[in-house]
Amino acid sequence: METNETCDTSESKGINEFNSDESTPTPPKSRTSHDNATKVQIPPTSDTPDARPSADPSEVDAKPIVWPSGSSPSDPISVPTGKDNKCYALEGTKKVVIFNQKVFAPRLKLNPRKGTEIDVKSIQNTFKSLDWDIDLYNDCTVAQIREVILKQIQLSEENFAALAIFILSHGEDNGTIFASDYPFRVDHDILFQLAADKSPNLAGKPKLVFVQACQGQETDAGSNVTERDRRRRHTSQDSTSTYKIPNYADFLIFQASFWDHYSFRSSETGSWFIQSLCSSIDQSGTDEALFDILLSVSHSVAINKESNVPNRGHLDKKKQVPLLYSTMLRRMYLKGPMSKSLTDESVGVDSPELEKKVTEGVSAIKLED
Image (cartoon, rainbow, N blue to C red):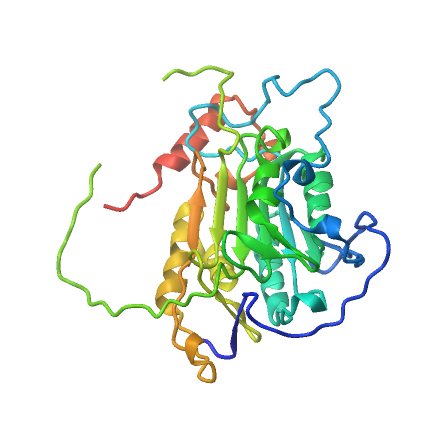
């Protein structure tokens, strides 16, 4: 049972001070010694109309990708994972990017998201223990979010093994999320920019997007059910060096609530979704694939949580269920040998020893009957 809950929706109304200045400088980075995360201090910017999201693709993609000299978008992109591999080969840097929105421009009339710093700390602690690099961006404008995606990811020369983006904010329906100054769209401003044709350094690699925000203003009262005593049993090659994948392959989007519904957050303990996610990852075994972990997150939030907001009847005793979208083509592991960067292995990427290790790891997984 949760207490003192609020919702990450634009329905809440509150006035907060928001400082402005004339320019939008590139966010500077400073490495923090206490948590090994990169906390980025982003100066506030003026509320200018050019930061407003637009349906015009030329605005969304205002800065084209500059391809390296001697290459073109039609050249095959080298990826570490083989065509027929059953799990992702994680070679390079595993990167977490957190967009944490706590305060908003006064004209948006959005309450500050109390407790979001608890979620941030949980994400940092969980992924630090898994050897992921962490970049934290607080209270970004839409323009700054786009700049981070462009400069720190799309145009980065870093060799990424996987990318996880956390978006912590207020939200509305149709995938609309609030930056500090304007709303933006997860699909247009995040997903489209990470597709293989626009971010070739992420082609064939896992791209995870976690969204802690309301998806609307509907609530889920839940339904009472009882277990029935009934048992069920479910049953159910070419290999070349160059192959084609869809541009939108290898995505996983996990959002806190179902379409058009509230998601709940406690000012004292953080959000149901992020806290359950981090707890499930922390408690997972080395043989558990990411999908199995996320299933346990959905179960925990849906079964074990119920809102306790007696002074707001329309939000009291309500349920919540996360929603998962995926175009992942393989299993992904956060722990164990298959979560390690191949650059740390003593054997080569194409060696029989490594192939045997990966094959044995996958075959050791126990599937449910």
